[in-house]
Image (cartoon, rainbow, N blue to C red; front, side):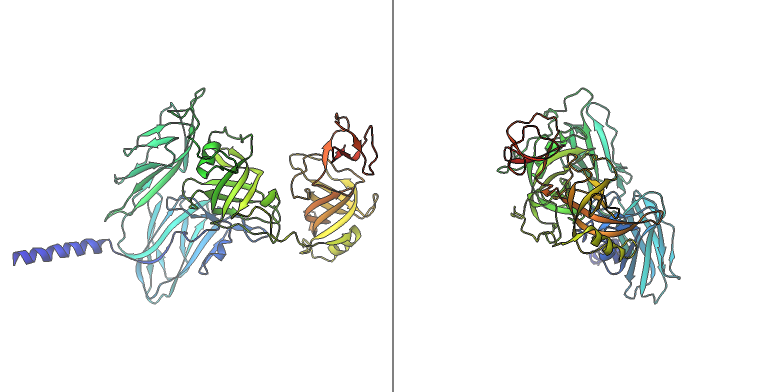
Length: 561
């Protein structure tokens, strides 16, 4: 009898222990289904509404509320950025007959406001442990759906993650925190970085790059070489506390006048590839190579890097012709990812409508320069391109849309019929003469704003606004002057300035030809440069002293300024 009673009591204790922390989850969101970080957030789920963001013409997010592949909120990547000064996220939650006291928990790096859309629903004050907020939600019986709004009226953006609405008693938040998202440590100086572990929970530590810095299971940090690594502290969870992992990006710098740390001489490790097409760098290699550069520096040579797209920040667009995305060696959005920033398409060409769009999971080989952009390791903007996309190296996509060739007068008539600020969907080719230039050429921007007409002295002109060359790339030299005959390709718009003046101009335009020559094929030299070799004009006549214009030397065209 006593033995049986002992078994009964033990069973009751086990059942009580389980029920003490049992929870009935009604709704939860950790954004793990997000793979496109440029998407319009209102296309994510039909019962979600987001505000506080601006869209580009291709309906991807330009700025404001958006998804990020990060974990600044203290949850798990990805997470939601709620824009400052009024950005919101609202979820309409089906309760399936549940009512009464519920509990809401979420991770956030700012103290944002939570509101209920239902009149009779009440919310308690939130308690905070680290970056984990918890509050009670009381729902009247018969309520079918619950509307919850997370509102950021602060002057800083907020990150929101790992939201959970439940009934019952949940496990407590572990409360681990590094206190910041990133830090810089210098070899030879005192290390002040420590993990906040207010509940004294058992944690394990790891470093993503032991060649840069290590962290022992006691939390002791050893700096080895210049570069970047990510320290992660993990708690596995128990019957009382939820599992949690928190990470911090650590930049290691050499002591002033020093040469790096233990064993690596500041090189940050050995690479497995050599950056050639036959032996391209892996993503891990690219991080090592770029990690050895000073801030703002880039590699002197172009290199090949092979990886798998793990997240997309900006897809290719016809407006810019480039894309920005992250690659990793395994296609996962973990710690070892490399940013491909301002990347051109196959064959180093600007992407156009009809070309194959990139997506997560694509295998790519990138060719170009790597750089350390203020601590971010990436390709140098517009100095790299996709050499291979899923094994394809040639641009087999649809060429640029066929355009209609018109005069300047016809372009002005088309614009006159448009509504204010409207843009044509048709791409036009407009031939005319440069009547005036709005500003002197600046190689930093590499584009032209010019006014063109049907004659050199025309009074009715079309503004060609910030046009690049035929490859949608910057002009590197000043090749355009008043009186030149040009062929411009782009859309037309009726632009209205702040003073309500209507200005007929082009949009997303390219200067395809100057005086009959493609802007892809013109080199530029100074009139007083020392020219080597016989020089001929375009009629094949030899010229001893070339003046301004187009000429041929050693089989190549060039332009004398």
